[in-house]
Amino acid sequence: MEITHPEIEAYATKHSSPESHLLQQIREETYRERRMPHMCSGPLQGSFLKMISCMIRPAKILEIGTFTGYSAICLAEGLVPEGRLITLEANKELEERLRTYFSSSPFSSQIELIMGEALPLLETLPNDFDLIFVDADKKNYLNYLHACLPKLKTGGYLVFDNMLWYGKILQAEENMDRDTKIIHQVNREISSHPSLVCSLVPLRDGLMMARKIS
Image (cartoon, rainbow, N blue to C red; front, top):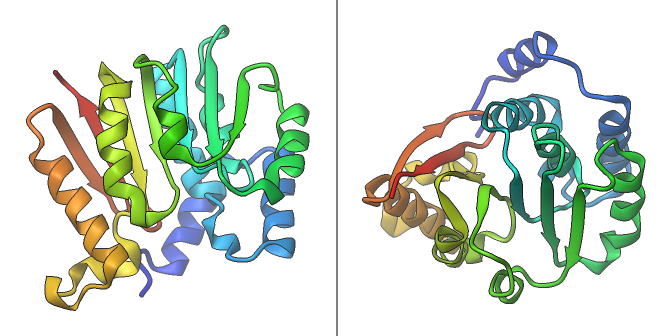
């Protein structure tokens, strides 16, 4: 199920700022060489993430799920000059390529790639992030929500990707598969959480954006 009509998405992409040469290289190599290349954010969502980051001007960003690094580089665009982005990736096969991409970017000194499973790594990180972006294994989305909230500063922003899950969230709950049920539960918890205000944006596969107010 298409969330956005392909021609509408193509029009929106055409009329958004273009991706950099490096981002184009990452996207093209991802689609040529990786399984499930659609996991790459791509130019439209990438420009949106960049816009969010540039509006917030975060000093510290956490990303859970690096994949091939597209979204990390987009988010790094908005960092303050001394800012830092930490990105967590479990797939060791991606490490060499990620380090090559990041070292080629203008943000090589600001992006820190940490390889390993996210949940134990989260326990080692401080509680001072201005922006957290989650785009990793869906089975752990609820765990990521609970682990990330204490890591986020009051006034900080939390963004989850794939929150419309190809339209599967419209099914009756008894018909949902495991991942869809988890995503549906995360949407419910975020939208009813007393410390969060949120907006579920139907861009690509859905971005849940929440601000921590207390």
